[in-house]
Structures are given as C-alpha cells and as structure tokens.
Image (cartoon, rainbow, N blue to C red; front, side):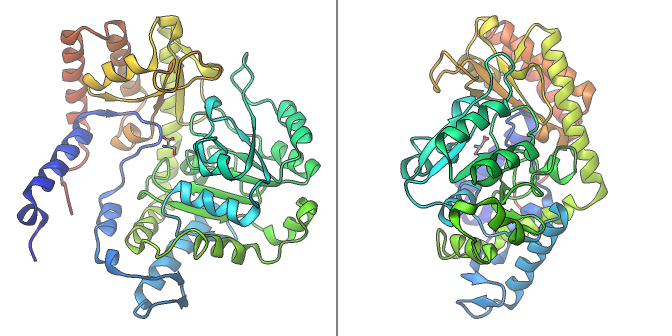
Length: 432
Ligand code: DSN
C-alpha cells in the first residue's frame, strides 16, 4: 500500500502546512491542546476499520476480541483517573455525550436550567439554536454584572421559579471554579438532576487542581481533547455510589433503576451507531498519560501560567471578566482599549497568535463581533512555556493590540513568535 505522500500529495501538502502552523504559532485557543505522538499514532491505526456496535462482550459484530480489550482499557483508566464508578468512552464528541444526557434524563418539553451561552455557557446547554434549546424548555442563570461570577443565591431563586428537571453546570468561557456542593443543595431543594459538563476543565479536575464534580453530580460529561490532552472525543462518567443517591435526589422522576444501562443505551443505540475504535484507543493512550505523575505537574503549570497571564494583562491596563482566573483561561474585555473581539482576533492571527473572539457577559456587540477575546494556556504549556514565557506572550499580544492595523508591527511580532516557537519545538512529524 502507498503512503499518504505517495497516494495523495495534494492532501499531504495541506497536512504539512497545518503541522507548520501548529509548530510556528502561539496556540492560545482555550479549548485546544497538542496530543502526544502516541495518541496520534493510535488515532491513525487500523482500528478505524472495525465495526463494534454495542459494548465489550455484547457486540453486534464478530471479530471484536481485540477492540473489546481496547475499550475496557480506556474505561478502566478513565475510572481510575476520575475515581468514577462507571464510564462510557464511546461519545464521538462532547456534544454527542451531552445529547445522550438529555435522552437519558429528560423528555421533550422538560425544563433545563443552565448557564447562559452569552455568559460563558455552551450551545448544548439550552441555546435556542441547538437541539437542546429546540427540544427542551431551556431556562438560564448568568453571572453577576459586578463580579463576573455565578451567584448561587440567584441560581437558587431561578431554580425555585422554573422547577427544572435537570440543572447543568459547566462552561466554555467561565474563569472561576464551581461550588458543586452548593449546586447539589439547590438540585436537592427542587428535586432536579445535576449534570456537570467538565469539557474544558477535565484535565485540571483529574489532577485535583480544581474542585471535583463527581461526588456531587448525578452525571458528568467531558471532551477528551481540551485540558485532558487526548484525541478529539467525549466521555460520560458517574461518580461513586451514584445508584444509591439517584432516587433520593430526584423524587419527582421516581427511582431510575440501573442508570448505567440507561446511559449506555442513550449513547448506543440512542444517539450513535458504531463507536470510533481508533479514537477510543487514543483515549486509552491519553488517559494512561494522564495517570502519570508528570500530568499533575503539567496541570499545575497550566493554572500558574493562566494566573501569570491574568496579572500581566491587568498590569498593562486590560480589563478581565471576573478580574482574573482560577483555571486555564482568561476572558479579556477589550472595550476600555477601544477594540472589539473581531479586530483583535484578526490582528493577532496575522501576527501568528491564535485566539478566539468571545462574547463577554452583558456584551454590547453581536456574537460575530464581540467585545472580548478568550485566551487559554493548555496548548502552550504542553509546549513547555512557563510563567516567564507567558509574560512575554502577553507583551506580544499587547504590542499587536496597540497597533492592530500596522502591518510592520504585526510582522515584528510574528518574527518573535516564531523564534520562541522554535526554542520550544513541538511536532517533528506530520503523520505517524
Ligand atoms: N468549541 C468548544 C470551545 O471552544 O470551547 C466548546 O465546544
């Protein structure tokens, strides 16, 4: 058989260009990271050929003896990493994992209470343009205008008012940790299920540098490619003693028997067909990496770097939503600099710095323009950047934002970005 280069030079060229982009740019998108060579190798394996609908030991296809072992390995590693009773590693993505949660816990028209997308939530937490907001009665809590933080008293009031069947926690642009015990109390008070979507923070939670949602949530979903640093995909987890707590916390729904079976069938056959066994193998590799001691050090550094970035931006007169960060990301409100997210994202892109424009709470701009940029440290921390390098990253971002239309300024910054990237080499391969 031919190599990719021999078979399809045009496509191969695009892969080479993307590898070069990743190698030579500052990757600061908070939801992105750099998977290991071993993880990428598993994803590019012959497991892509195998159909394995069902679960280990109960498949609808023959020849599953090896992929059963792969899936069990991924499940056992995930359980150990998160101290979970049960896990499903088949979701193709975070959104697929979340779709299964709705199928398992809600009926069409039931009420969800989630964090407003415009305040840092996620599309699948009830946005009107997503299946979750179309199919269910989505109600929202937000952050306080003054603090940029969630106030549980306001969440409690809203929960009492709308009587949700399920409360979701989790965000794509919230810079503070969550009080899971407080949310649990509210869920208990109104008889709702509690679901945490830890897609952004799973790696930090695994390393115990953020609060752990599993002891308090009925169910937890995640992606595997953000701070967890695995392949693109999702997982569903249930913490210890979940079966016993379920009937107590959700009296309205009656006691659900064997929630793990309900959740498994919500993935297959409920919302997905054949699992992506090559990606499940890569999840096993990444989860194995996350069980190593150096992963904890990595996550501590992700947090230290975000804190350093926040301090450096504040020293340079920038305004941060919530005034700082507890996790891996910061949200910069650019209005006091006379800029918007679109201008900033485009100028930074031209200088080799990749961020995304992002709504800030109570934004006055549209989602296509926005008043902010979201910046995360996981990817550059994987590269080896520490506080000193992140101070320089902020200096370079500031240099761009001071003269965002000055092409020679942008070219100067790009040169510095590339020099720093070369000093911290990343991938020396395009395909493995
Ligand atoms: N697209 C992800 C993010 O950037 O946060 C959320 O799904």
